[in-house]
Length: 597
Image (cartoon, rainbow, N blue to C red; front, side):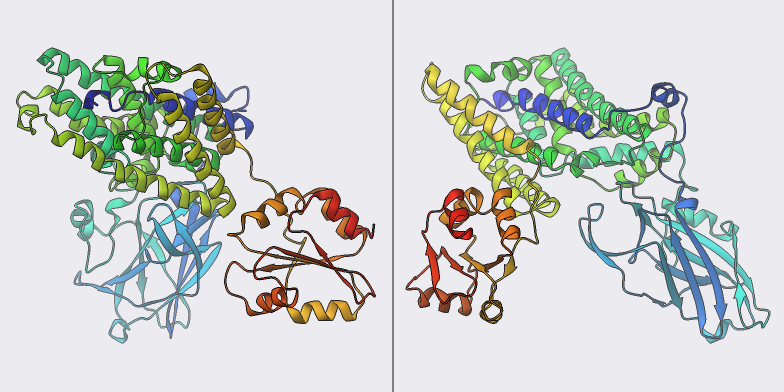
């Protein structure tokens, strides 16, 4: 398959993701801004996020044991433990890092740093050891910190300075001052003073030109992300094999750039509108929606199948998407830019966090400008290749190697889809991940059906469409609420205790890998009628999970002549007999047994 057709057919996926996301946003009430929200947005009203000075406040006191830093974070804002640093600057300008004692924090998976981190909500007191040599001297304290909001905004690192003259009193307070003049040059150059993070990333040191530079660099680095790099690579290779003239190459570069920049500006505009409507959202807010995460996983999985040559996007039911991105048309380049932006939405890059943190505390015009610069940076590599004569000629000549390279590029897309499934599991549960994985299987099956043979029969087209609809229904369906208090874990001691009390007991021995068990639970043991029957008859429901080895469950299975699950037992109140239910259950059957019918 020619490289200039590799991205064909994905326009409908992009449009579908955006359509479903907007529908989800409307369902959540994100689009319900007040009647004056549009005028307020244009007028540059302040954003929902607090200024860093209001979000995080610190009071420094000193005593004979050392220093105490009392931090207070606004509700739904937190501070990173690993970003705290404290140093003293003596009269000669020498800086020494001080030891900080940290109390236990809250462990969270942080999307900004992409790992588990200790953070502090509300208040935290940090104890700092003070060297004895500083007694009787005048010195300056430098306190470095960084925090984020739950809604997704991470503030740049910040350093505050406090002055102190030792008066000999038992408890002494420190007064915050502006940055010492002797440190101004080093701070603006982004250096570190003896390992202490300086204020180069703080909002007070950032200027609009510097932020735009950071946005440009962050956009360039985005191209190296595993979900973006394959799309860019294939687009570049398609350009080398198309034998276009210089003017045509320039136009394709501009079309690709417009696709990216407009997409980033649209995302920024949606973000600002949602915030104006009262939603505390930040960059990556769309990934807080399990629906969007599921659809994006579908998109990357389908792209990976196409790159592997396992999914041919040539069926007539996909012609709408193909007409938008086919071949070397300018529309194809524009839609490829849109696709690149969509798949880049989970990613963050160096410099990007600082730029966006600044942008989301500014007026809408500046925010949109920063996002547009980010998109320009992302498009810049392709623009340079299409505009500078001779650069494309330096790339390897088209040949059979392109097919192998295309197949290789599928693996970063598969890895990105797996990562999104992991994110989905953290947001919801393993059942949701299993359902979305099943949806991926249906998407692949539907695409295969639609592409079987030339001129696919109508029944295959309808079956493919049905598979796709079912997959999308799985992705956008709200998670089912689970009654966690309906059952208790099985143990022999618990069972014997309940029976000695004369209580009725229903026992379900199951395992996650038992398909029959899962089907019975969905069909007969998860309904409202089942739960009401348990409560009405005061029946205790014990569930024995045999997913992993459990000797107590094994012994109970052997007691009833079973070598495996499922096993369903009902112990009637005050009776020595036990009723063994069939391995295939229906709701009416279970209800009849539990009601003594």
